[in-house]
Structure formats: structure tokens, C-alpha cells
Length: 456
Image (cartoon, rainbow, N blue to C red):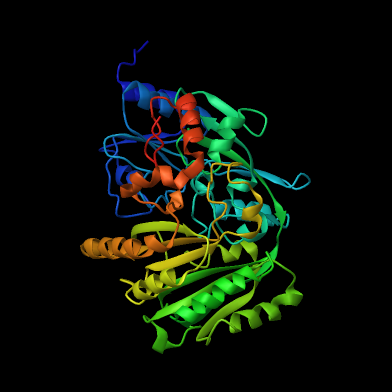
């Protein structure tokens, strides 16, 4: 009998998935993440295929004092899904989704994307709030809060979370919901990846099948932004319109003279009856002079793919985020100034409405603290050439400085970058101390620290 003495061989023997290290042919592919700004070289990547693999990976990282990164969909703008000289537990092979149409719930593995989830639930005419890019990981988006096209009608992704299985820092599997480990369940709903690895998540579903969705484009103009804010305040919750500031895309629905020029766009998803579609168009027409439009009835999963081609893996990203209760003149002025100087075709500002159903959850009912916010401002540079990194980061930081006086102190953790750790307490506001208590219970050694970190 051969005795195993190499710790990596021990790890390989403990997992059914793949263990990749430097020198392996698949190493460069295995270490790659969505945001090319984070070109890191982990010591080990474990491609887990089940919860047992995740447990083995967490225990190995602890035993060998390796920094531990958790990767689901790989979309973390801050690059938290990878780490130099540490261990990455990659969940991307754990993507199963099981739907219970009678109970209107679905349970997904931790590596599932919103494309996986939407495909599975749409077969039953059901959906829940997800992101706006189908390749986004379900787990990371939900743990941070989860904004998307159905938020005004159905609440945030975390508001629809009904249960989760979590591998803790001790390598234990904890199943939590409103009755079992309710403190952990509370913290997961907005507290980010601070508490463990979510290996499965169960959601409440809503009847949503076809929607009226797409883009309506206008010249960049502050009056259009004011009109959009008024539309949100006076619209049924089935109508979600995300305001996008960008350079005109090179798409057939937009006249060529607007390609590359600053525009506003209303990214619309109306989940009400088709008989009201014409009224939705009329409301969009009232926002300003329409310079281009792509709007049609489509299956709900399709609306979450409309920007997939424009934002593929391998681009460089640097983002910031803020909340606000209103769209003030000062905020509009900042958006106009920086919207007019977008550094690339791939860059944009997206302002998400988070009223309606999001406001029917109390500020302390989940870890997501900003239940009084009406808008979530996401902005930042996205670029294709590493040589443009310094310019894009400088533009984003200047934008952030200009907007901060006109927004609330904290922002959405999923839009924060690596240099935003000083905002963690503000991001969690009145919930920070309670989150810290939960952190001390489930991760006192701060094993899960590659995130917007709540230090025990």
C-alpha cells in the first residue's frame, strides 16, 4: 500500500472534481475570471462538483493557512473570486436547478448563473429577481442583495431567498432558513460572502412568462433623467426601467450618427399584460426625443441576455456604487458631466430603481440596509486595453467624488471595488454590529475575508 505524503495528493483524493495547480495545462484557464483587471495566480484551484468537494477545499485552505477565494459566476468586479498564492474553490460545475412548480420555489446549486436559473423556471412560467447579465452568478448577486428587472414587483433577489446550505469556516454544512439558524439566514440576505460558501440556495418564484422589454434611446439630457425619476415614482410595480448613460451602441436600431455619442437609454422590462404595452411605449415617448428603439414582447429569460454580447468575459472593469432617496439636481449634474465623457463604448452608468416591493421589507429584516433608498447608482469604466487602465480608474474615481455629496453615505456592496473597504460600515449602516456578531459566530478567524469584509 502506498502512503500519501504530498498534501496536494491528499486533497486530490478527497475531491471528485479537479484540482489544478501551477504547471498544469489547464492552469491559465482555471485562474481566469470575468474581470481581466485581476490577473492573479492562485496556488490551487479546486473545481468542486458537490458539497463534499467544497468542504474538502475549505478544510485544506484552513489547514495550510491559504487565503481562500470563492468563485461562482466569476463576475465579482473587485476580483474576489481569485487570489494570489491562495486557494480558489470554483463552483462553476455545480449548476443544477430544481423547480417545484406547485410550491413556486426553486433550489439552485451555488455555481448556477441567472441564465441557468431563468431557463429552468421559465418552463413553468415562473421567475424571480435576478441580474441583468445572464452569465452573472446567482450566489454572489443574491448574497449582496440582488437588483434586477423584477425588483420593483418582486423585491430584491435576497428578499426571495427562502433557504440556503452553507459550508462554514469549520467545514460544517449548515442548512438555514427563517427557523433554522435564523441569524445566519438573516446575514446571508445582503451580507455578502462573509459567512461561508453557499452551496445551494432556494428561492420563492412569481408568475412571470413573457415581458415587454428592450431599450429606448434619447440624447444625453438632464431633463430626461428628471422625467425618468418621475416615471418611476408614478408607475405600476410591473414596470421596471433602468436608466443607462452610455455612448451610443453600434446597433441597427440606433442611427449611425448617434454611434459613439453620449446618450441616455431606458432599459425596460414590463411584466404586466400585453394589452398595456402601448401605454408603456407612450410613457417612454414622454421622457424625451426618441432617437432609437428596440422593444418587443419576449420571454423573460431573453431580457436578461440583451447585454451579454456587449459585456463578455475578458474586459477590464472598475466600478463604484451609491444609493440615493431622490434624483437631486446635484446628482443629475454629476451624471451629465461624466456621462458626457464616458471613456469607452463598453463603459456605462446604470441607475436601478429599488422602490416598490423592495420598500415592503424592513431595514432590519435582512442585512440589506438601505430600504429607504429609491435609486442605486452603478458607474465605472469598462475597457479592452490594459494600457487604458489608469485613465479609466481616474475617471471613475472623479465621478465618485462628484456624486458622493448628492447620495447617501453607503452603497451596494456588489458594485464596490477592492479600495472600498473603508465604506463597509456605511454600506451596512444600522445592521453592521449585528452582522459582526454573526461573523464572530460562524467565521471568527475571518477565513472568508476576500469580500467587502466584515472583520470579526
